[in-house]
Image 1 (cartoon, rainbow, N blue to C red):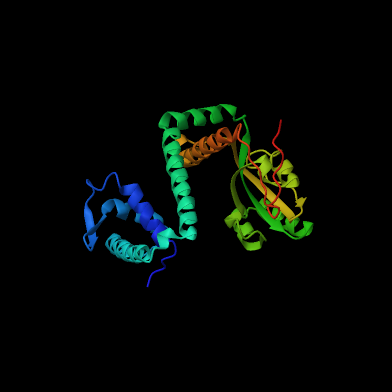
Image 2: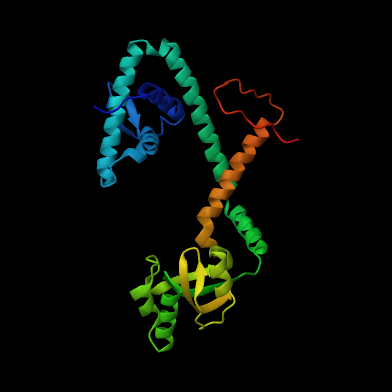
Length: 275
């Protein structure tokens, strides 16, 4: 037996949301001649998506959801017959879920209206313009416990051994294969390491550098000006920012001129609005 918590509320909401399109929707099941449509199926699919088995194919998921809607309808009809729709608890839940669905519907509309291609490119272009020129380097390092170990590593490298090979053999940093740190800007490393690395020339091997993690031997492999990511690389991040900002702006606007009081003494006090 499936979990029917909130089943009656969900059933009535489905009826409300799909009332305008029932005549156009395709019927996928019937319960005593009461139709369940593909509109109902679409809403239930969105609602249940997170709980569906990840390894189930589309046909199995569709069957599960249709069966859920059939059971939902049966339970809702039974609840209505028992006059649960007349209870204060049901009415409170209906008020809450109606407002929740209305909020989500409006937020979805705002998200669609706000995240146009032009709007996303505008935010991208503005962000690209504000990026200050910044150098980043590509480097490797060897991390050891003592200065003597670092000096011994330098001696081996200067004698002709490959830096990456020595790093794999003795470095205490398990996260960098061959000591490879990739590309990074100065602010991404601890100050002692960063100051040494960014004062070096390409191809240079450092003297032992001490940080809170131990002793480092650094090799700078390349330098360049930091490149701003291409639009397609960060489009999803920009979209989330634009949508969240549009929704937050709506909330801010709706709160303007409205008297709001937090009366629950158990809740965390709200800071006074800035003047």
